[in-house]
Length: 115
Image 1 (cartoon, rainbow, N blue to C red):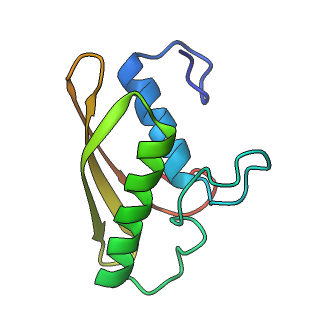
Image 2 (cartoon, rainbow, N blue to C red; image 1 turned 45 degrees about the horizontal axis):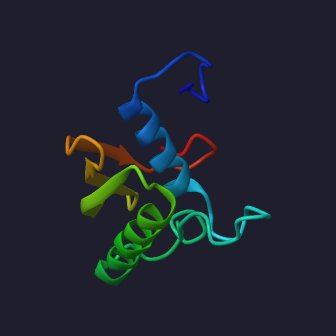
């Protein structure tokens, strides 16, 4: 397993997180051979940050992770809207092989490196 940023070896946990971030930050419909890959997080980033949108984000993330990251079972996703109107999310997942819990938090900042 290799980091896509540094080209150096990374742990399984880091690779899973890297994969989940790729899924979260890829806009649905942008992959030519995998039109369903990704979430609505990117195309709707200028949407009003209210509870309805927060629920849509959590649902989109949960569905995408279930479909495209088979190594984990996501147990909890929490999306928070920060004061600047930018979403951040906390994910708790369980690795299917070892039953180890994997937690991570990310904040969406925009731009190409997004999270």
